[in-house]
Image 1 (tube, one colour):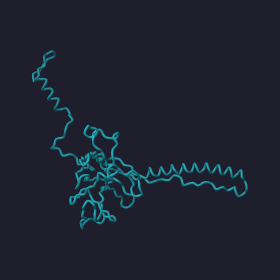
Image 2: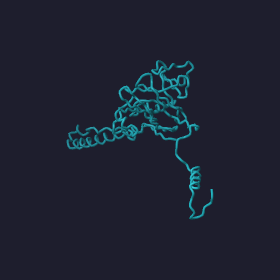
Image 3: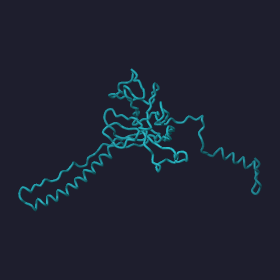
Image 4: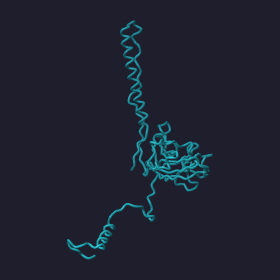
Length: 271
């Protein structure tokens, strides 16, 4: 490059050399090179067609909660996914008629089975993600199912399992908490169906169980204690007090019920 002084005309080759030099030290967003191996994120979901139209097989990279691997449940006998339990399957991972399989198993790899007609719900037009608002997508039905992680009731040993289907709405006696890992979308036009995955979680998790806490005991109204003595005025006052007390008691017990149902869950966060 020839040095130039202020006021001199800048030649095209000098300008191009400067641009090339800046480009080498400037970060530019773009596609990763195929030579780079991406980090194997946990919970990463993949989907493929099943044995017939409308059946989908969901597989996943294994993930951990509190250093415990989240497993996938299989029936020990007659599982609909066609799994044959090996003779050497660990007894410690068998609970009743359910086997906790690892997502890292290579022999008969595990998967979650979804049926479009049974496990999905229809997405309203107003709730469609932008990706499914194209001209061709509008002509098709959009359905969604969830891949989620749930924690079993606190006890020995604690267990975390993965499942797929309609997202669990409420905490039951068997589940302590639920976290959605991915959404499975299906565009359906008659027998023509196309599935895609929207990943929601990429990292291993910590969890802290929150048990129901009852702040006050259930209250009962005061009995009509004065009625037997013929004190009508006193009885009337007590009756009015009872009515107020009953209304207040009902409101308190309803609030306590809401608190219990809302706190019987698991608090999650990424680490």
